[in-house]
Amino acid sequence: MLRSFDGVEPDVHDSAYVDPAAVVIGDVTLEADASVWPNTTLVLHEGAEIGPYATVGHTAIVHNAAVRERGLVGMGATVLDRSVVGEAAMVGANSLVREDTTIEPSTLYAGVPAEKVKAVEDSPWAYAGDRYVQLACEHAERSERIE
Image (cartoon, rainbow, N blue to C red; front, side, top):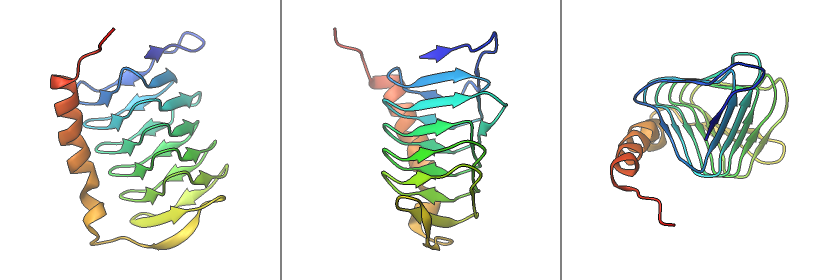
């Protein structure tokens, strides 16, 4: 579901995927091939963005924060205000990224609060965005709502 806030609507690229069960509110930019999965909430008031090939997993919350190109926010994770998930960085499932946190590119952060676990450069997960783009296309084409 896309909703405006204070007269500002989300800007969603044609190739981005927003699951019908997700909620995207306000000044949100979803760039090419970004994907937002079921029960996710994106609330952005100051023009933050979800970059190309970035993925926001099931039930995740991104509140007034940015996820850079190929960044991945795991299922159930929360990324709070003014934080930045760097390029090809990953936030582990159910993790909490505190306000004003910058997650370095190509690293895995996990935990409550999220802390650096390891570098993930050259990891198979570095290309997870490609797989999620494929899955998003499949869902957009073959998923049907059943009343």
